[in-house]
Image (cartoon, rainbow, N blue to C red; front, side):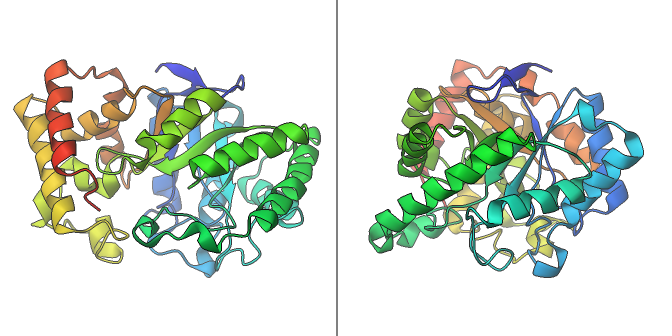
Length: 346
């Protein structure tokens, strides 16, 4: 599998990143370990998790369980050095009420290191900003006028010093953000440059054929500031695989069945229509819709790597090979037409 480097680092990762957020709820420890082994066999060397995981649902009492499953794998297999490992500290919320501060950052890192049974985290990400975010369908009522820019900047300067200390100690190799904005990335770049702290090398935001908020300001920022997009939910939580058949079918044990029934706010009439239209494009051109959706994220005019999540090895196998799929001009033209018809389906 082809390799790329993250941002301006020398950290070499596979073009596909293995997501882990279902391990501990939808998936058992053994199933998680089986996915890790299959991904490694296929050439994937990049794995992403978070202190908040597992999800479906998110619970304070289960937070950290996914990291423990990964740590158990490293202990049993002895294969920690074969993986580039990414995890995250939660922003303000039930898992971490204080959010991301100079005091909470090293504490969270130590806890993740212990659960993951490792001495270093390759990429450490801020799961969402303290000031709030327009992600998770919050874009419909986003109101930045409540943000205190001075408080935001003060926090960034304080956190920058903690970031420097963690890199110096050898516990963190690189930092990134998640669910951030173009302004947030630009401000982080300024603060970290002023304090001689390590730059943000990645941003992990939702990105797929059905969620393209990244395409404009953030794409421009990533080009000029040289950070990599780690695209989560590239299959729109399974909507782009075709398994829901435009909302007419709910497969057993699927996220639609075991979650909130709304796929985190993604279920709308336009979303079902759009997802079915993309599936039909794949069928028209003789493509697997899952592979087409993932391949599209790798074909963007900015640095983008998809995080692929599965609840079985069989699902993982369906995604593998997407990195080698080249989309024709005709496929891209059909995709552009559907995007104009459904620019923001959820």
